[in-house]
Length: 165
Image (cartoon, rainbow, N blue to C red; front, side):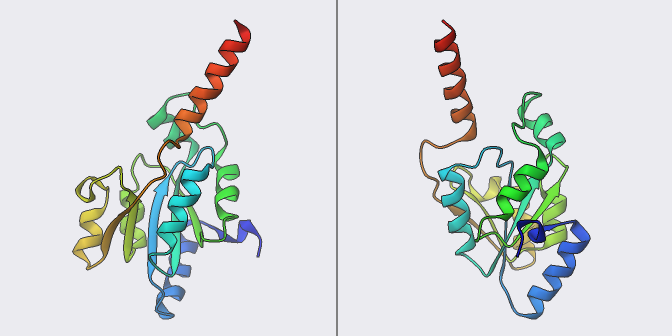
């Protein structure tokens, strides 16, 4: 299987979800920007996948990230990020979304389990009400402390600035 085989449009994903549900697979959903893949991401996604049979990743588009994080982001384009994420063995599907939140995507996916990091309270997680209303679960997983793309970018900028001084 090629990494590109795990990147879906929403209609393609919905067909794949139907097939998985016929096989009684438990669908886990999470989302994010994943601009620079780091240990914190890998650990989080691996833990998320362990909660069910299939892990669907909603990936913010470039336009969505720029609106949320500012004009200097993302650092990598959406297709590069999608391929990198799809290459991870514990991710079963990647789908891009252009909204600032994944709410509409969550409504379309209807996951059995919605997952975010433990830096969120369940009631703060976008879509928790949608998932819980249909009998699904919303869970948080512990994050590896000290890892974030923003911190990595700041560290690189500091190194560049100190080298220029």
